[in-house]
Image 1: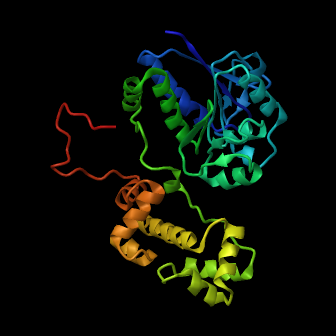
Image 2 (image 1 turned 90 degrees about the vertical axis):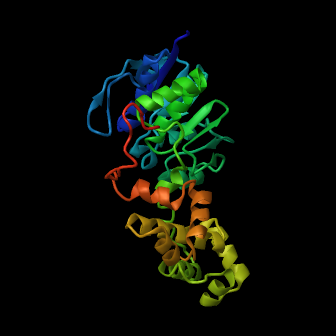
Image 3 (image 1 turned 45 degrees about the vertical axis):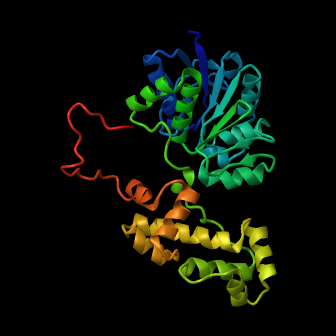
Length: 334
């Protein structure tokens, strides 16, 4: 079996889990018969200080790499400061000599700054997806995907989604059976339920500039259970329905109906997080019935309200009842 050479491009401030998570997936695959060689490089060849304060030694400078897959880690500074020129140049040079380019979380911003995502689909951490779309309108940003592939370039969503992407790469390289054994060994899903929208707080920071639109969005946010229609909302602030619809599109990139649904969805998520039942959350958020809430959750988040509540309400495991205990010799499915 041919060795597949993988290099992680790292830099000061890189998020440690963006490297250690995918690297552990590949290392686990090696114990099951895969042959990945793992190397670590920085633009200068010098060790880098990671997000957790430790120093990560590297094997070489990026210019010296000869690899099959390049993985670009993310870091908080990539969305608050200009991308270092040596980082984008390193990505361009190595990409020209690789068959596969991968970014983890905000590492997508490095690929974008290097001009490698123009006209392509890509994703990044849900918190920064809007910024990526604004800064690079030539990129088709998918804010919900856990990872995206377009023309041999792979981008992943926030942090742990890099682990999901690495497992997908193992499946591409070695098949589903080996990838499944990796998932079992690392106690992870082969395919995580739902997209990253289930983790997001999508409306935070969306403050309209226009006074009339702000009045409407404040009303919806304060009383999501009211029967909000485009006509009633327009009448509330004394503008035409057509004008209000145009304001929603121009300032928020959505329609009144979609905005109302998103506010109700966020409200329902918060109620479920606080321990309210699915039926209670549906009524209080304005969905009317648990079934309507369920359909919206599945359509927008890819999971049911019950599964969402179980996943996010607490870190404590439910104590198994007599019927849910595993029998000896039977492993729980991953």
